[in-house]
Amino acid sequence: MNYIQIVFSLNRQEEWKIDLFKDSLLDIGADSFVDTQYGFEAYCPEKDFKEELLKPLIDNSLLDNKEDISYITNVILDQNWNEVWEETSPSVRFGNECLIRKDTHEKDDNVTYDIIINPKQSFGTATHPTTAMIIRSLLSMKTLKGCSVMDMGCGTAVLAILAKKMGAEYVEAIDNDTWAYNNALENVNKNNVDICVKLGSSNEISENKLFDIFITNINLNILMDNMESFTSHVKTKGLLILSGFYKTDVKELCDKTKPYGFTFISESTQDDWSEIILRKD
Image 1 (cartoon, rainbow, N blue to C red):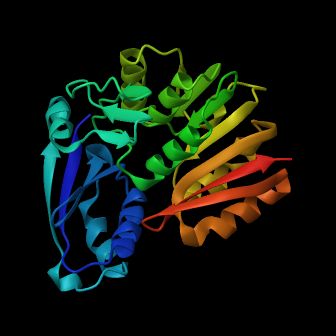
Image 2: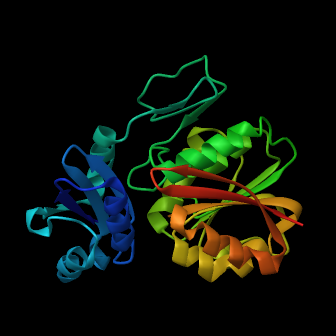
Image 3: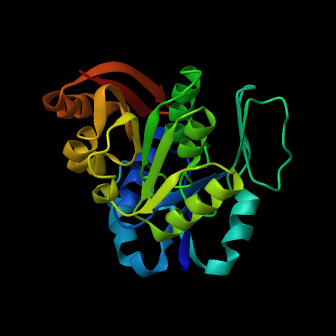
């Protein structure tokens, strides 16, 4: 599958306004981003890209100095993705607990969990605050021995792989993007872990399966639209870990989960992005 690379040059912009603008790009098909010195790059499947929608998005955004904003587009052929992401995706370290790296980067025997992720364009390199916050939350649990874990909207499957390496008994990972699904399978195999990877939506969650920990790092609209399904697959006393939204959305999401019997446990925030953990009573 070919992708369109949109290279944005943004001058004198506040970070939270850039994040909101990125969020709007998700609505027109962009599925991954890379920050640069002068702005960021957005990637969109060529079949979904409609350049005529970009200018109205910029005009209606909260970005300042719109007359200074510029962008160029490039076609990234399917076979070039390894080269593009080899250049842009760094290793990410969480103290001595976890290192997330490409297989071309050196292993560190001093970390507890060494995870190989060759991300291509799939979301989940641990460089984004939402992924990083969930990783920190999982690591804070010390062990997931005996737990069942769902990684819904898994992207690279980095969260699923970490959960399995932390001792989870059963892990399921689902994404509705074919490229992400194939990338997740590749990363699972490279890490030599047993994870059930599926292509599809919430309909693909194993029927009647309940999870001790249900993780989903997806944008706000998808979370809201699928909350009934997601919450129905959490065990009593199980945890629901949500991210992919802004701090201003936390109350709306907490209110959405209350009718399904969930209690707020904690919130983390990084660069205006938030993660919340809730328990099913």
